[in-house]
Image (cartoon, rainbow, N blue to C red):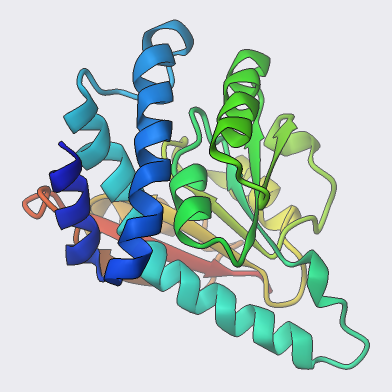
Length: 230
């Protein structure tokens, strides 16, 4: 089982020394997910192998692209006059059981992550995971996205979330810092993305789509949608 995780991480492009650090923490997280999934309804999977492929590797398939975007944004922020760069953060909106936020935080320890979840019982699970895994770069907010303070995050990611409609895109863009904030959405088929984006083009005049390749799920179309703030 862990061999599949290691193989998947290698396919995504992680270096051997990175894989050696990532795998033990993912194993701990995997055990917690498997133990509490049915109680807290954390993710749709029946076995640990399903969780690894459909959730962990799916989440991490975007890590190289997110790292590149965040690094460029952080460097730009650091070079801006009078900028305070120590508050740069990536939020996972509607994180549920911590996906993709916890795998990303494990793989990208140089960035601060905030997991936003409205259900308190899931937040208790997340806080326990953060403590067990020793993730000093992760904090939890038990709140609805609609109630988050304006311009709170540099980047907001979301994965298992509702479609982007008029109401939700306005909420998500509002909580991003301006200018140069980024909304990063894990999505499936390009045809659905185009239809979804057409309905919100008044608020999103421009966006980019990057194809993702999830190890062991190469036959399923996955894409990353990048939406900048105005």
